[in-house]
Structures are given as C-alpha cells and as structure tokens.
Image (cartoon, rainbow, N blue to C red):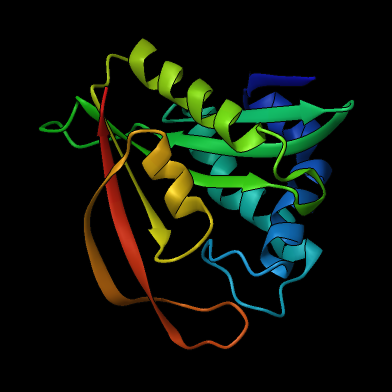
Length: 173
C-alpha cells in the first residue's frame, strides 16, 4: 500500500536521512536532477537542508512524500512562489522514487497528490522539465502533460557530463 502525505519543515527535518537516501540513490542511478557524479550522501542531505528547507519553512514550497511498506520511498515538490503576474501556475520539481521502489505506482500517486496540492492553492497550470528521453517523459505525457519544447544542451548527464536536451512540459488543471 502506498501512502502519500505532505511534510512541513519539521517533517523534513525528521525525515532528512530518508530523503537524502532517496536523492542519493536516484542520482547514483543516473537521474538528471541537478547533480553530477560523484555525489555523496552528505551532498544529498545538504540539498534538503539548504535548498528545500528554507522555502518550505517560509511556506513557498510544498513537499510530498510517498511511503511504501513502511519506508519512505519517493518524493516530489511543488514550487508555488511565483511572480505577481503568475499566481495561476506552479512548478513540479524533483519527482524522485527510490530505485528499489520503482514500477509500483509511486510516481503516479505522487503526481496525483501534487496536482491536488496545486488545485488547493488555486493554481490552474503546472509546469515541469525532464531530461529528454528519460523514463519520466512518457509518464508525464500519460498523465496529461504536453511538451512545450525541447532545449538542446540544457543539462549535463550526471555520469558522462555530456550535454543533454531537456523537455519542458505543461498541464492545465
């Protein structure tokens, strides 16, 4: 059974080791989520403490987690601190499912929950980006996201450091 819930700043602090483990495992598995190999567990923990915790505490970001078999197995973020002329949109970021828990519906459950969070905030447009050709791209398309375009050389492959294209996607809610 999958349970998805929102964490506040205290919840992030309490679950920091598990969140760091998910991020570290995903990057080690080749996920293109902003980091390059080698990537340490300490760097993963620092990301949660330094990049996610401050806007989460300021209520400018939402953090959702999925638990499976009593273990934290996935996470996604909703960035909703938008400029004044964009109060209708939010960005989905860092959809991560631990490699040991993939292909079991966690990503879909997290995306359904993040959409519900966006709707609760009155958002009517979701955006995201994904490395072109990654397994997440067809998942997002199956969930109703449309490709807005592809930017070549947007990011570097975490292993080879060669430029990779990124697909930008959107979904009206």
